[in-house]
Length: 196
Image (cartoon, rainbow, N blue to C red; front, side):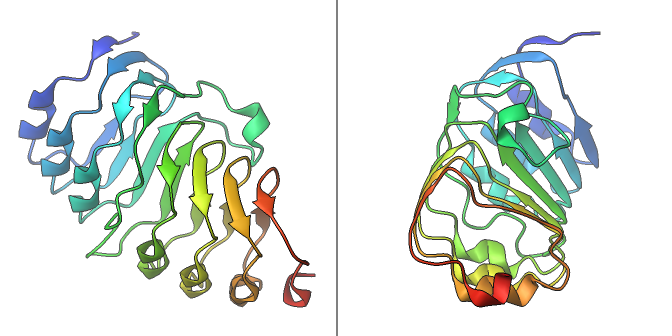
């Protein structure tokens, strides 16, 4: 069944909801800020829809969140192969995302018009294994705090407008990191020796 139209604000009344997967539908309009009231939510997958407006900052209140997927969906690391990109969705990444419980394992915001800096606080999510923020309009530097993500396996920041140099601190995750994509940005300088 294909769901069409807006996601109702009343979704925030489902206080015991642990998993919400609405992938690959034709949902439109804003993602309701009431979604931040779902205190038991562990998995939120809204990928492959046509949301508009801004990413709700209330997502930063989801303290039990383990997986967040918004925007395009694809299992590869290439932002060129995204299915269902959602360029009508903008705003910024909520600075408190995944905190205070620090249970976030997967963060994928892909193929949107989300802009601004990558919050330093993302580095405090010490269980994070996948960080896919590719195909957006993110600016600023790659946060040095990403060095704290010792369990990180995949990092994809490709196809944004990130600038500055690649922080050598990123090499602290090198032992486990199996995917690193920083292509199609405005990065400068040399590749840190620790990454080669």
